[in-house]
Length: 452
Image (cartoon, rainbow, N blue to C red):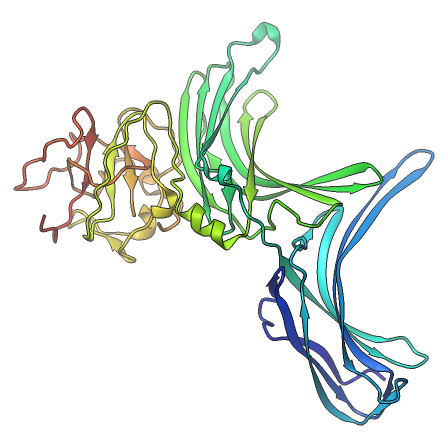
C-alpha cells in the first residue's frame, strides 16, 4: 500500500535553485495509515547529463547516445536495527537530510537533443518488492567567471551584396557595436546598429535577437539546436539610406557559457542581426557573447564603462552634482555614449518639464527606434532599464516638454528626436550659459527648484 503522504520538502522549497558546491537540505515527510514493513528509507541526490538523437536512413537507422553522471550521493534516513527489515507503525514521520553538491559540476540545461538534470530521489525500500520512489527536481547553476577581455567593447563590420552579378548596385554595409561581450543574467546588453544601404533593395526591417546554440557530442558526431530567447525590431532603411539605431535588452536567466565538468554538451550564445530585405533572401550576421555567474564578476562588470562609439568622438567632462535633475540632452553628430547602468529617472511618477507638460515617466525611459541625423538630439538619464517609447512617434508635431539651456553636466546617450536650440523654448529670465566645450552644443533639463 502506498503511503498516505510521501514527499520531499526542501528548506528553500520556493525556488529549488542552488549553486554548485551548496548544501541541499530538507525533509522527507511520510504518513502511514497502517503498518508497513520496510528495509530502509534513503534519499539520493542525482545529477546526470544525456545526449540522444538518431539519423534515419533508407537502409539503416543510427542512434547516437552518451551520458554522464555528475553527482550520486545517498543519505540513509532509516536503518533497521537487525540490518534486514523493520515494521513501521501507523502515523507521521519526518526525516531530515543534508547533501552537498560538488563544486565543479555543469548547470542545469534543457535542449532538443540533450539535457543536464539534477533531482532528489526518496525511496522506501521494501523486501521482495519494488521500491516506492518520490522525486523532486532542483535547478543547479555552476559558478563561472568571465575573463577580463569580455568587459571590453566589441564591434563587427560586414558587407553584403544582394542580387545577381549583372544587377548588383552596391553592398549593404553593416557596423554592429556592443558595449562588452561578457554578461551575467539581469544585466543589459547595449548595442548599436549602423547601416549604409548602397544596394538596389529596401531593408524592410532590422531584427536583433539573442540566441543559443546547444551542441551534443556522441560517437564522434555532433547534433546542434538553436533557441531564440528574445528579439528587438528596428526601423527600415530605404535604398541609398542610412540608419543608426541604438537599443538594449536584458539578459535573461540562462546557464553560463562554460558547462564545467560536462564533456558531451557545449553551449554558445550569440546576438544575431537579421536584415529583412524586400526583394532577396534575408541577410544574417552573428556576434558571439559570453554569460557567466560569478558574483565578483557581476561587481566588476557593472562598474565597467559599457560604452559605444560611432566614428570620431570627443568625451566631455562629467561633473556630477547632488541635485534632483536627472534628464540631460545634448547634440553631437558623431557620438553615442553612456553606460546603460546609469539609465534611471529619480522621480518614479513624473518628469518635470514645462508646467503644462507633465508626463508619466514610463513614456520617457527609452528613445524611439529610428535613424538619426546631424540635427538629432540625445537623451540621457541617471539606471532604470529603458522601455519602448512611442510618444514622439505618435505625436511628432509636439515639442519636447523640457526646457534646456546650454552647458551640460553629463554625457548624452540615446537618440531622442530632432531638437535644436532654435525649436526648444528658452527659459524665461535666464540668459543662456556659455559653451563648456566650444564647437559643440550641449544642454540639460531645467528644474524650477534649482538654486545653482
